[in-house]
Length: 463
Ligand code: GLY
Ligand code: MN
Ligand code: MN
Image (tube, rainbow, N blue to C red):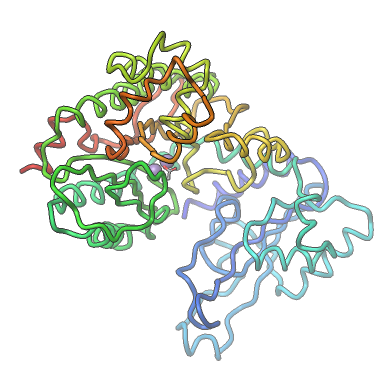
């Protein structure tokens, strides 16, 4: 937790930005896994934690933007609870740690909210993503769960995303701590990588690092020889000589800040010539992005710059014909990299995306989702000092997608489909680091770099 003054200042800024009405910030409850007393590991809602600091289930934060009143609603532990959990601080004691003096039982919240509604006051809330929170809001506001998105506060979404987007010095330190967890996860995976081991054994070991050094993984680890499947959670493969292993994994610091890195390397410890050629193209795109990111750039500019470097490499290899710029303009790169170059990173691994993408325009997301690889385009995202974004270009050879594009006659004259036939079993390569936009440019987070060049990887994996 940061000092109380951090949370006091954040709440004051939020209240000023929103201007009027009641602002609700529900923390997460425990979510039962298979029966009520066996819950998933607790993960606090990031916006609640950003403004109220507490990493404890079932507390709701309330800010009255007109009067300035701030309160926490939650129930103190009973003796019956304490038998199971041990002694716990009271809500009043926890509130004092984050600069809140007004604390009330959870049962009082309904009355407080209904009074505001009766007076015609606006009640602001973020689009809920968990069932329990939907039910809570539905009950408080008398809105059916399915209709909650229609009444979400766009003002609150903008204000929260704008504040969480710009990382302070103390947040950057927490992100650096998350980096160190990620570094240990990835270098352990590299050391374990050898023919005969099961992907799951590596995934389990690195997730253990995340758990023992921080509050766990920032997302389920992707450890797969099928790197062409973007979020491949099947880790039952046995590592084979000649294949590539893609490891996309990250941890969360104890303050709840995330890391997210990907490395791809040969199971045998030595890249084949063909693997090296593709790898060097992806690394060139990754490093190019890391060099050019600077304040005030639009994200789409960075995304397209990565596409250009990838396209140049594919033209040089003979997999694309004509000019790289024409290939990018025709959309041919969405076949080789059907995802965005990166995403925001902070208290969530895809930071603030629970609030929708930067344009907050849900109608057009559905439209774009119908087009391959562009459902989250982040078209309105401008990179400002304090923004953290991932830099994660990749080249993927996805037989089903290649076949579909070919059958539909897409990119004819641009994609060399015959040459591509020899890559059908290649898999996929992604390289990912986390970049902080500074006042003058940018830097990759971390005090060292996770091995990334062909030479560095061969030295660690092929020892
Ligand atoms: N870790 C998932 C991603 O890179 O987006
Ligand atoms: Mn990742
Ligand atoms: Mn990522």
